[in-house]
Amino acid sequence: MTTTERRARIAERSRVAGDPIALFPVARVAAMVHGFYAKVREDAVLGPVFDRRVDDWPVHLERMVLFWRTVLRCEPAFKPALRGAPPQLHQQIAELRRDHFERWLALFAETVEATFDAEPARYVLECAERIGASLSRHLDPVPTGPDGSASPSARGPVTTDAVRP
Ligand code: HEM
Image (cartoon, rainbow, N blue to C red):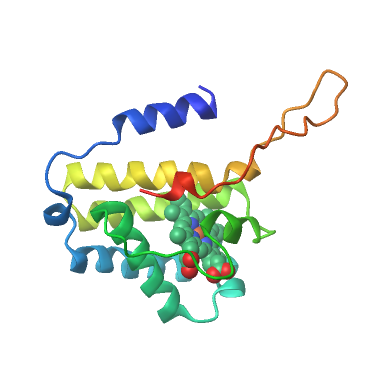
């Protein structure tokens, strides 16, 4: 399955039955974020990457709670940072690799499944996969032309659309 097909399949399935405000209470969203980043900071692979970039953890956690409130509860809570929107911020992390995203999603799944019932948890993870696919898009291998040269438009423009709920 191509990345485009995978994204289309995720988008098609990404529905949640019920009222998101009731399914994703703010306190539970905050617990998810704090629990997840506590694991990230302890993680041998992800921890050092974050430590090199995040100098104010309380601010990062507060912003990530706002981000997930926007994604899950459709609140206009999260505003991109002055230094860049999420796609730009991740592109600036030169050491970022595809396997970082796999590890991130595996740790996130553990936290989400311990925080929410099965159906809301499925939805949260689909959102994370969809956003992760967008944020890691620049890490995809660049398709090459018949002469072996990289196609100039292969990577496409970077937009913030895909990380908007
Ligand atoms: C589905 C996967 C991911 C999601 C949904 C996600 C989401 C976000 C968001 C929304 C921000 C912006 C926070 C802000 O504006 O203040 C952010 C920042 C950041 N993310 Fe991710 N992220 C993901 C994967 C990763 C991975 C795999 C890494 C590294 C291993 C990573 C490292 C970082 C770092 C270091 C920052 C802070 C950047 C800075 O403030 O300069 N993220 N992430």
